[in-house]
Figure 1: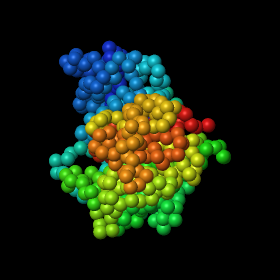
Figure 2: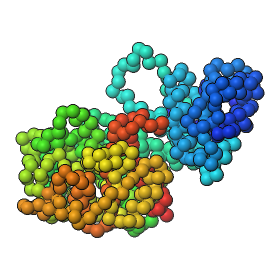
Figure 3: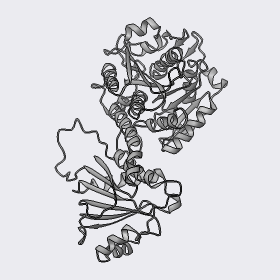
Figure 4: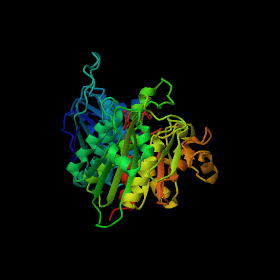
Length: 497
């Protein structure tokens, strides 16, 4: 979808939507339109009982006296309550509504919206951002469309505002966030027979065009480094495991980097501890953490973020071959710590153990944040509305909470402590990879903490938010792209110079 910004005009063909606040439905541009329509809009508003309440619409199709094919009023609610999230939502909803019609062009008018904490340029950019996110689709493997599918995608959007020039600059940054989210969605949506570890690693190399240095470590290199924990997960697969290191050095020379680590299990059968067949197809998305890290590195580089950032992703496939590791096996991690593998379906933490140790050992970062579709237990606790946050650092946790609230990717901090940590002690090794049924997401985080070596660290369990998450006004995709927004905001607000 092509997005442009322009001054306010009523002559543009296609669908025309005017954003209005509650109690001011027929003021400003809306009143001008009503005058050209001979009072038809006012009559429609009265008949529908439309007041401008948030999430409400009134629509006239084929109006006489104006160039538009249809006119809509979109309610934003009370002026004082207008927010970035609300504007993104209405932008997405309008693209969704028009996408069900035969119109392919949409103009959205912002005029006179009094949002106390939101300048006109920001408001316009957020509407465009919401519309852009809604425009995403993943249909590359569909060869036919349904016979009754008469809809057409919105191909062009014009956001009309008296602050068009400033809005264009604001949106230029947000569009890079959208690019990173779309890349993340694409990766999560791909089937596992296409996106296996080597193919995923190959796709990360496209980031080099943006100035990201990409390094791929194969199994031989990882074996020399002693990554027995990560490598053990992939023993049963015909596809070799990979470790990808992405470096964006946009900050000061010598400044410590920030680091992001992603779980990239390209398909998870559970291994010898085989999962039930029902919904196993969803396990193509078990690399959502790695997808997010890749999308984030794209965004940081595309917008030329003034920060040194490291992205590390461990890419494996967990299959039940005759060579696969077994329950009861003991592996030695890169840290030298030994792990008793009680359940081969608790494999993501084994991948992250070596990836985290490698990252803190090689790069000495300011902090590490890992993202992983790690446990079903986090969905039992939080559903699909929040990601679970586990951390050894209060400052980093607060920064993540604030960034999540600002961007609509919310996190909920979960407890950690020695009582939970004891649950993963093993009789035969330094630790075991599961701690029992109770507190499953917490004991998984305790496991990871044993590999961060006191570096400020946060673990985001995104099992409920990265894939098969609820569809919203700005996301109709199975893969949500969750994580790019919150982490980009974290960097922008706290770590750029």
